[in-house]
Length: 346
Image (cartoon, rainbow, N blue to C red):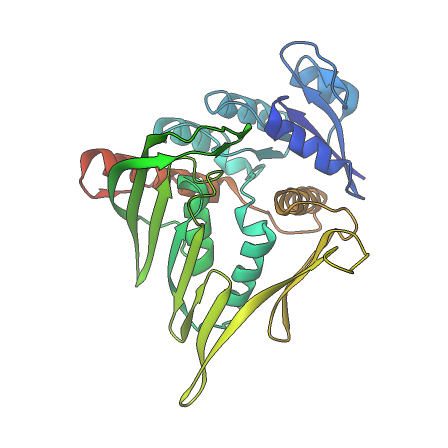
């Protein structure tokens, strides 16, 4: 059994200890909180107290942006592997300081889970299987800055070199019926900002970022994803490709979901397929987990395997820092109207 402690007690921290309760080989041994409170896991007033009493194998940080670098550094200085919630530091100066302090330790991973979400994991598997040939461009309209950048980079295999960003922002009226807290029951139109950016990674690789305020929750905006390749492209849940001379084929990605109609196996995700090819198989059947819970469970299992020396690093600090540097460049380019090239901090 591999154990971890989570620093924090807000909704994101709760996701980690709740999902861990459903895993076979990973257990949350406590939460480090500033003020005493009743939680489903033991609580500790400091990292030092937690390490002494609970002896976790790694630490998950789920704290405000400004606090994250200090917590990460303290854990790494104690020799503890860290899974840090996004972003690992709030700004470029913070990323530089954090990399200088812990980059060489190899102890820090970033909790970037978007490409572990079943639908995205299936799309990534299709691209990596060569279904559309050599991937060259990804377009993401779904989530914000560093998460979207992680998806773009992962889908086209972009590394950590300099990236040139151009961006614009527009404001238009939009009804906002849903937030994280639920239905608003507010029919009024409100100003919503849309940011559109192009990312030039060099070597023929590029990305398009498109995000509208609260697009995570607002169901009045579609989530869109496109990956272009040398032999076709993947659009949301469909692939068009050249399979033989004079033969262009369109094939859907199909999710098998149990629990519908006369299926009495209970509500659960089973597989996502492309024709007869299984792109994703739920590693947690019977849990009845949402896609986000499956992604977090996969991330925790991968982190635990890395800590034990049984698997690769799930998402090293350098990758998470690169995502955030590009996200910061998107904001700067949108504010100034000028092209921005990301700096090198590694």
